[in-house]
Length: 196
Length: 215
Image 1 (cartoon, rainbow over the protein chains, first blue to last red):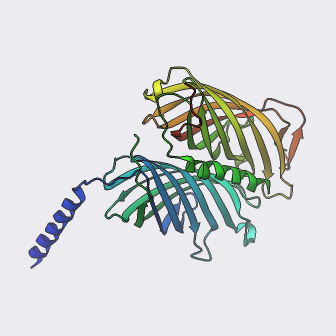
Image 2 (cartoon, each protein chain N blue to C red):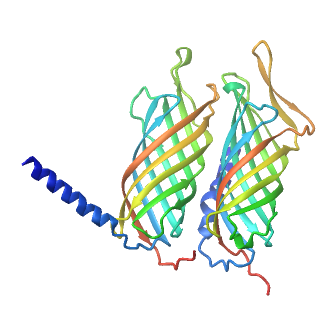
Image 3 (cartoon, each protein chain N blue to C red):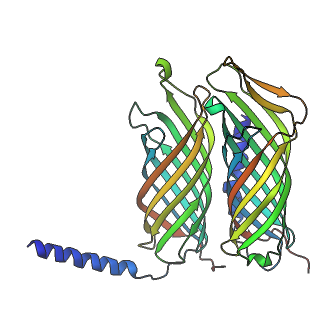
């Protein structure tokens, strides 16, 4: 019985792989994709986990280059979390490694700004600093899989580096890894002939 | 309030200008219009080699001739000073002229080196942390020059690394820490030549022609 289950599982895996490797073309130029989702992060110097609502979009200028915009909003999950705000607006360009295939691995270069507020617990304090703005350096790697004409699956890992500037605390440096995955949507406003 | 205006300009450059995209560029000859995003590292900031600033911003380029390109940029850089006891924010908006050392051949070369020089306006704000001292700020002007290279992934899309020294021409603003632990922000009139070494990594995409070339 156990062998039968394993055999069925292997057959299902092979069938799904066959579906995945069918690289029928999907025209990306002029396509718009977007998603909104939950994301998790680990803030390395502070050993803190973060939870975010995030949304992003890409507009494909050609099969391998797209304009990218992203928003990240940190959720208050516990009363003890160090960062009461750690939101981001990012914008830039994404380089897609494949051309017009359903698999879409990419590298995203999206600098932006951070809006950060921290809990000040030094010397018996328990106050929250005002939201401060600071520039952020970020890089992301990820992959989309365009399963249908209007939706796709995605996974994305982002690295973020910023200086935390709060008047009430010593300034510090923040390194962070963020991960998000899920279902996104895509549509085309008009079909534009590829130019590259 | 001034900070919000500067961020609004940055947002305009990063998000709005790309909507100009998708005109047919007739790629063979300039003029060309491109846009991009940049990350910046600020080194040797104002005589303090241990400080490294990080910044972000955007730019667009208008290439006038085969060998001459112009770059119009805005960015913001934050720098930790004195091991986090103070900080500096620099906001830049300016322009540069790029001269390609090798003929770019319509960017068919993988690497296109260039020299660059230009001018910018800057707003600097210094803060001492955990003190009651009010942050000080000043507007000034700056000049920058250096070199860089495009790595052309395609003729339209490049990654650019630029290294340039930016020298501020306005009053010198710096933090003076005393041996007894006190600190103050000092402003000295006159140009001292203080500045910082900026290393920019940017990605850029050529989207079309800003005007038609005369035949």
